[in-house]
Image 1 (tube, helix red, strand yellow):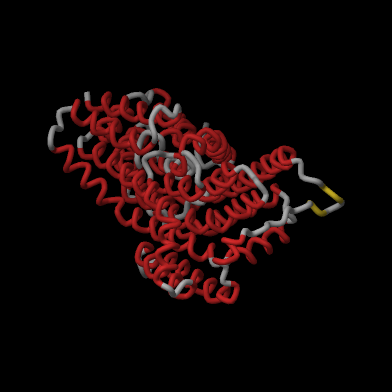
Image 2 (cartoon, helix red, strand yellow; image 1 turned 180 degrees about the vertical axis):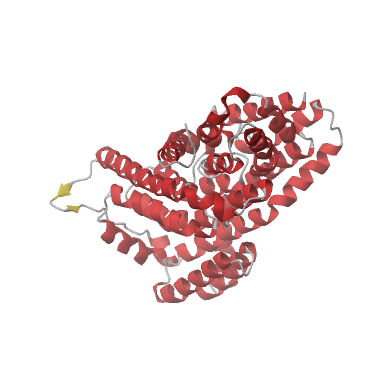
Length: 432
């Protein structure tokens, strides 16, 4: 009963968000609470909600202060010279801009944190897209692809798979390097094709080797906020905040809190100016913070009631035992869509051990099941999953609706997962 209730809840959530029948905030709160009450959780539901909110509190705090920080340094004009240099480097061509976005996300995601990757990539590239009037869905799609195909031995999913199956992470990862390279090629080809399509949509004029790049005219209000003399202090502060955050020495939320305070004193020392800058960006920060807290409530209720574990156990029975050799390949194909249904803990600690053990008993190495799962489950799948706060962080920073991002990005992320799965077959990682 719990498995059915959980499945209906997840499907209802996806349908309500994708069809825009409810806003993500409302759906993420209403659906799990209703499901919990139906399943008999009663007043314990409140405990599950609070526990779920507590699990995402650091991410919410990081998001709020990240929005304030980047808003302040953007108002001060720190990004203007950077944007101009990027535009000169890429020549204002969407194909190059998309490739640059994907490669930037790929590099930033070396630390294995999707939230950090999106916090760096989106604010850096969003003004470029806005300057050229490019579709912002391209930005979130390319950032998602770059982060999704970059699964490393120290990433969360790899560690979970390693712990769940008691296998060294490096042994799981090393055979996947070839497939990962194929994924990078797929990412760049996707960026090129989408970039060409965007060039046609925008009707960009091509004169020889140079595209005409539109110039940006600042309003009087924007000019009044600019602090050109503070470019280098702001840039050094940003590098310090980002570097310390990526190093893991200090929690991201703490770094952004400190960075916000310093940025305000550097650029707007007057108390009234400081209040004005906070007020200017508070609405966007608080709106998405509400969605992130709601996402925490959703996962808290689904985990606390046992619905996630029940769905994990029920899913195992659908695997045909007489087709054991196909298990890794099938797992690779469905791993990305499963990210929309299962959070990483319920999958890697619930489904994966059972499937891997069943496969092992039938003569298929457990490590192959783990490798197949990593090709999509919360790798290419996490940037579109409503079960991960990073998804809401990505769309919030870009100013998009979740449904817009999902409809556009899911085919390309699923395509990357399928291509890497097929590559594994050809490279001999596992059989068809």
